[in-house]
Length: 189
Image (cartoon, rainbow, N blue to C red):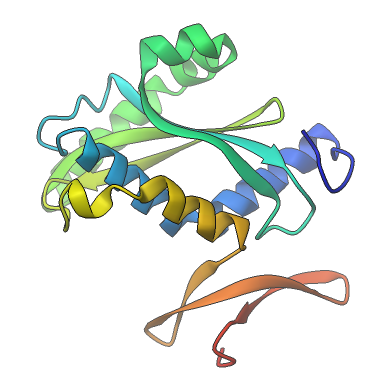
């Protein structure tokens, strides 16, 4: 549970979870694609029947390092419902939006393979995102095998990628005064 500090109130925890997942979205998306590739690739993957699930534990109030990852995997929805019945109602309530986004992405995105729901569960709070997956990802299962450890390293160290003038740079979120700010690890931002 909360290791560095006591757990914030539920509304604050959900807001922090949203900030954290947004900051680490490239790392979570890469892990999701890698998990799908390790399961045979997007052409064979049952997108509507699976979710990418991340179990998170609160650590601190820094949006870049707020949570640690306790679990990550692509799960059949039926298994997720058995293990986390609290997720079922939320996922079912989002079915229309999921189908609408999947239809739109299929019609507008080149090489669209499917849309996967990504569920983040942190200390009783849930947050769902959808990630579109293309049918032509780079890399095979062998070079994607370490996706869990790569994700864990990025999250544990608070490594946050950001586009700076057309170049992706790695940085961290640091507190400056009363605000959190992204700071480049290269010193250029």
